[in-house]
Length: 91
Image (tube, rainbow, N blue to C red; front, side):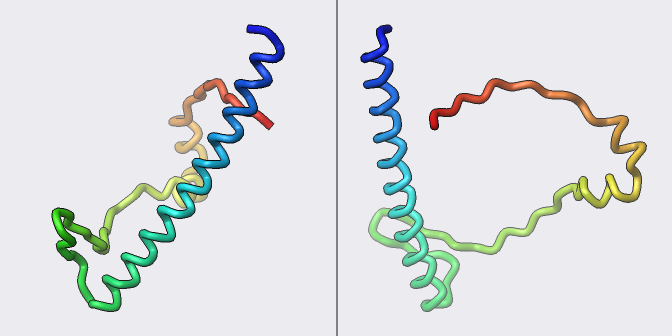
């Protein structure tokens, strides 16, 4: 792949990333409007045409690794494992 083709690909990638950011922001805005309407109606679920929209409180339990590390640092260290990955960035 030549330098001009590489430049074209990077430019296209950056344009698509910008479009993705705009679309993501628009999606979040619509979700916020739907959530606000559900809160206004005091409902966790509603049918909208063929769609069912839910906005429910979900409770889960998660392991607090920070607290465990603070109180059992030596034991915490025994169970750490190293992970490697490749990271792709374009700036």
